[in-house]
Length: 81
Image (tube, rainbow, N blue to C red; front, side, top):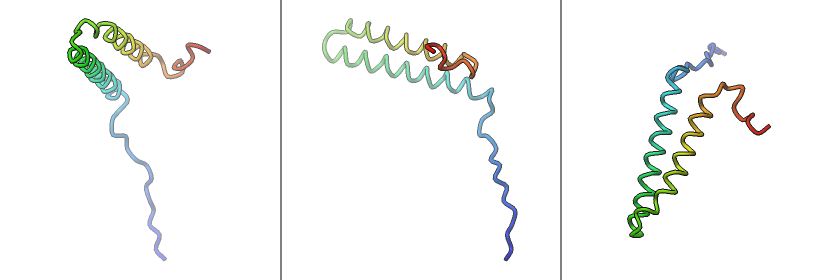
């Protein structure tokens, strides 16, 4: 039987240099969505100032995610060990 050679090498969709800005953009979208949802919930409850603590928590989580992504790959996850 005829068995053709199969090329199993799949080229990457994005290069390494394109992936980091995409990750930061997705983090920004997530932060913006979280801030918007927290504001909408607080406004629906009639207490718009109640969103401030949640906005601070969301911002701290986003800053920590950006800091973690900026670390070299070997250093990720070694903060507490």
